[in-house]
Amino acid sequence: MPNPWTGKGNPYTRQEMRDRLQATLDRGEAIIAAGAGTGISAKFIEKGGADLLIIYNSGRFRMSGHGSTAGMMAYGDANAVAMEIGEFEVLPTVEEIPVICGVHATDPRRRMWHWLLKVKDMGFSGVNNFPTHCIVDGHFRNVLEETGMPFSKEVEMVKLASKMDLFSIVYVAKPEEAAAMAEAGADAIIAHVGTTVGGSIGVTGAVCSMEDAAARCQAIFEAGRAVNPNIFLLSHGGPINTPEDATKVNELTDAQGFVGASSLERMGVEESLTNLTRKFKQIPVARK
Image (cartoon, rainbow, N blue to C red; front, side, top):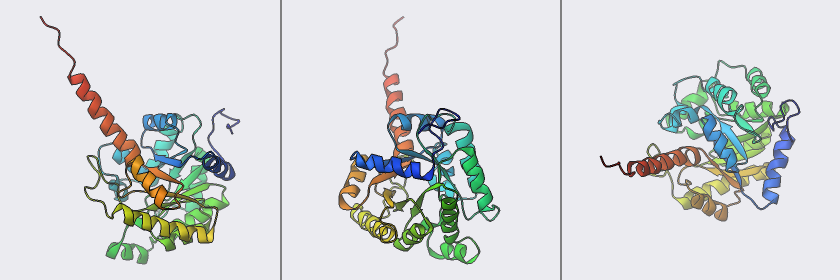
């Protein structure tokens, strides 16, 4: 449904977002969500037929040649970066594809209801919880939980977003996190099984095997569906890097699609630019 003020698609209501994704499944297609750190990435991901775009601060680091995990570090204001990418690069560039804003819900400097109003006013159709503490573990995770920056704040953000009619597609790493997000009203859960392997700045070894990744995804999916049978189920990260990998996970689990950030945006750029440059280097030089 086009926006009557602009003639373009964005923004969409929460129900419109759900209807679009359900229509994708009804056509027998997998749901594909893609991270975009630049306008040109967003433009051509849309041309490729992705169902939605997710904008978050890791995209800027990724497309600057740095590891996506930089987005988890104190290298800038994650919320401001996501807003800037959306406002000046992606939202003015895409035509019809829905755009989701990554929200750093544990930032103690933000009044989350106030920030979500800005996200909605900018024209984003929903939210994603990134940076997310669900992928932090060990002693440091315990410190975050005990010092006012717990994962539960990400859950609270999703509950607020739901009240504001914002679609929510969220990262979770454990079944109990999936259940909590489903209780909060999350529309889609993404089973995050680790940093993506491969390429120039991906990890060199997967945090788990493909079989383990599938088992972890399924446990997360079942926990989410136990609360909300209509929640959408997507996989991301770790050894799931190629269309063939995502196919295998879809075959082994209840996954309805895949979220690709490094595996779509970064890997596409790395491979195409390398190969194209090599072809240009092979052009003949005119004889004098």
